[in-house]
Each structure stands twice: as structure tokens, then as C-alpha cells.
Amino acid sequence: MLPPALLHDRLRDRSAAPLILDGGLATALEQKGFDLADPLWSAKLLIEAPEAIRQVHHEYLHAGADCITAASYQASLPGFAARGISSVQGRELIVRAVELAVQARDAFWAHAANRVGRVRPLVAASVGPYGAYLADGSEYTGTYAVADHALYDFHAERWHLLADSGADLLACETIPASREVAVLLSLSRESPGVPLWMSVCCGSEQTLWDGSFVSDVGRSCELREDVVAVGVNCVKPHLVQPLLHRLRQVTAKPLIAYPNAGEDYDAASGCWLPSHAPAHCVGLARAWVAAGARAIGGCCRVGTEQIHQLRDSLHR
Image (cartoon, rainbow, N blue to C red):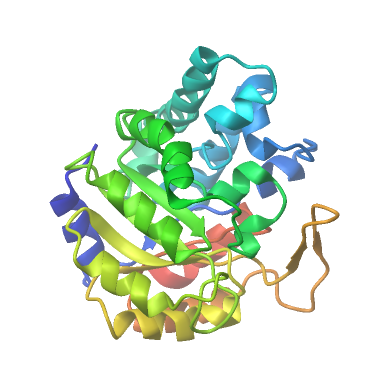
């Protein structure tokens, strides 16, 4: 795992092009024909088809990603337990998610041709929200009918497994509620020296889905040395720039942005609704860089083609 100071330096180097993140893991898996209509979502393939996950990581690296995110977003001990998987097996699956990403990165980097003009790619261990475990679209409402101590209990063991997994950093992502941000920041105090980014999910130009202000998240993260970047993900592309501007007003941290393709998620049907928005607003990315973004990629419905285009645009 890279020390937070080294990640800070890498992200703050404005003489270099921004870090290119990968796109949606589930999106790429669905394009390969996998049915992810399951409470475990992409995490079910940790059980059924781990090689497919490793292959998707490999494809994102070849598309130009400087950082790939492990398939741990919806991998949780309660989620696995609901499928009859023991706690021992559940822990092994969570660690396996990171192992698959590390294996893909190391295999990619072993070829000299892949190192030309590239920095060694990072592996981020995804820390998804409590709402992902609920599998009811709560990541897009921030409405949790549990107390903060229950959120802590849900996240704690997975957090420590991922902190010790060999990932370069933890990616707290699609967090829809400020109180969940606070819980994750409190957990990070239990793993000093482990870098993380904090990426929230927002329904407007200034608020998370729970109605709290994104600027308050920025202030909380500004005070923490282990937070190497703060930003937004799985938001509509047109919201990214105003949200980054609000964050820049309260924090000097490198900013991060990886929006979805601009569609609306229907929790009842568990699918994305058609949209007139572009597949991914690669053309907006330069404005996000100007607003302070030092790591840019995509989320749901953004695949390898868009990540390749994004790298071409920002590294030209």
C-alpha cells in the first residue's frame, strides 16, 4: 500500500496529466453477457466467475486506466451471509476481490510495452455504501433506517480486511449521506497510514442525496491527512463541475470525479432508464480538470471505450 504522502504528491502534480480511473465494473461484465440482477450484483461473480472480473480489470488497464477498482463495492459479510456463505468464506471473497485486481495489474505491468508512457497503475479497494448491501437503490436516497452505530458495525470488519488486503488505497464511493461519511472517517482512524479517497453521490449541484451539503464533506476531509482526494461519483455529468467548484471552495485536496452516463436509476426495476444524455461527457472532462479534478473516470454505464476516449482527450 502506498503511503498517503506519495499518493498526495502523485495527485497534486499538475505538470502531469490527471489520473485516469476505470469505468463501471458491472457495466463491462453485463456487456460480456453476465446477468447481475442479484442482491450481490457484481460481487456474485467473485463466487461464480472470478476470471471474468480479472479480465475486465485487464481490459480497463489496456483502455488506459491508471487506477482500477476492486469488485468489493457490494461484497459484504451480511450480504454473503444472506446467501448462506459462512463468515470465513465471506472474508476470503472480500480479500479475493482485491487479489484479482492486483493480479490483473501485475500481469499488465509485467509487459514492457505496457509501461511505455505509463505510470504503474494503482489498485483501489472499493468501499461501497450501506445502501449497496440493501440492494434497494438506497445509494440514491441516503435514507437508512439504522443508527450510526449500526452503520459502523456494518462497515468495520470489511474496512479492516480491505485495509490489510494489499490494495494501494481504499475508495469510499457512492456515499449518499454525510453521516455515513463521518462513520467511514472514524473507521479510518483505526487504520493509520492507509490512504483513501472519499467520493459522495449527489442529487443536486450542492447536496448529497440525504440533503447534506457537499461543502461540509469537503471540510471534513480537508482536516484528514489520510484522505488523498475528495469528490463525486455516480452523479449525472452535468452536476460534476458545480459540485467540484463547491468542494474547491473549502478544500485544497485533489478532487476526483467519475460520473455515470447521465441516466436515471429505477430502484423498483433495478435498471437504468434511457436518457438523451451523451454516453459519457468526455468533452466535459477538461472543465473538470480546470475545476481541480486530478483523477477522472466513469461509473455506471461507462465502459472501456469511454475510458479510452477519456485518456486520449486528457493525455493529448
